[in-house]
Image (tube, rainbow, N blue to C red; front, top):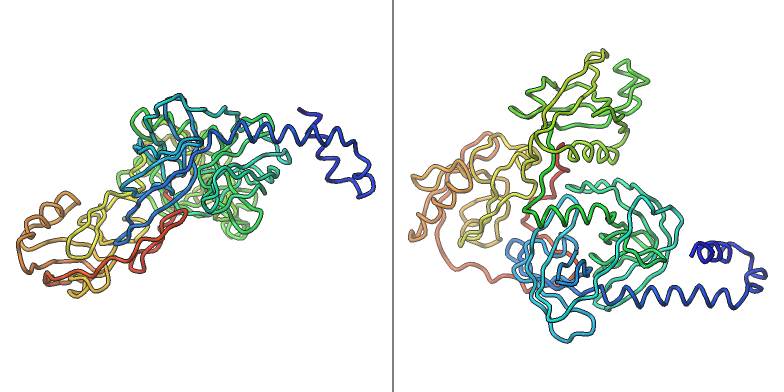
Length: 462
């Protein structure tokens, strides 16, 4: 195997004349290896189709998936099945579609676990380890780009440990130039031994793709099967300590992150952390962040500590070192629960993440995330970003209160909503009427956002 890789590396770097002189037998051996691996992996790659609802739209989303066990466990991307009302899986060699159950999803790693009930043992993939992956090694990406099932592309591992500045993602991606196009999401990246080393997540331009490391995918799959993901939470917002700020604070040799705010009653607050502190080490691991995309490394450090466990934090306060111990809590939900109404708006529960990213003035109420154009709610003047505090005489402190209140107004031709909009209180009279017809369903790899949706939030705080 090593001989094949070295041969290919030499062939692509040799000048034209030398390459032409290479042994036809050796080239045939290399080609045969790629063919064998492709034939072995393709039967393990499935086509995933989901009907998802985003705001007032229903879209058909297509992607890829990987058979993780003969009894029907399927790994794919969270963004392929996010908000799915129905999911089906097509297995190579079978004409029927299998209905799939979403066992669980994890937005922060973009991994989802599906389950189907096959009528035969499925050809499960074999898995490698990310520690064995080397920059420059040859890989195959397998998926269903644009609905073209069983497509194989060939390339190299371009980089490891990529931190992408993408809201809510914690991954340190494998970068590859093997093609990952629309519809390839959820398919595998495999080495020339046929071992899966990652789950493909997204492409960026031509020849740049990003893959979730296999160890991360398998760990998330295990946790989803056991009931859900629990990550450590510190309770701060932060920014990078760049060189200019380090020099201004008279700590030019320091590296780390600056604490911007501390959530009340959080582990950080209980440990005495303050805005302006510079965290330089976490559990004896040095913290380095000069750019926003570098913050992911620190977020993963925090998230990797089991809730309830103590961690040591080394910080600088007024340029003086300080050691504190902090007992981490369970990270609050990143993806808030939602509720749809029959008068054209949706609300979300106000989680700590929603409160922080949307810069709300209260943690009480129900957050308006979407208002359909032309709906009774829009005609009443309700806007995305409003916080509902009362419906008729029913106070709203949380999502459960909202559900009771909106159910209580179900038989009313009109009802009053009290909202908080910035520093103002608004009283809006909703008059029931015919709602506009929803737009036609669209198709693609990932659900599009409607025009009245709120913008994407910032990454979750550690």
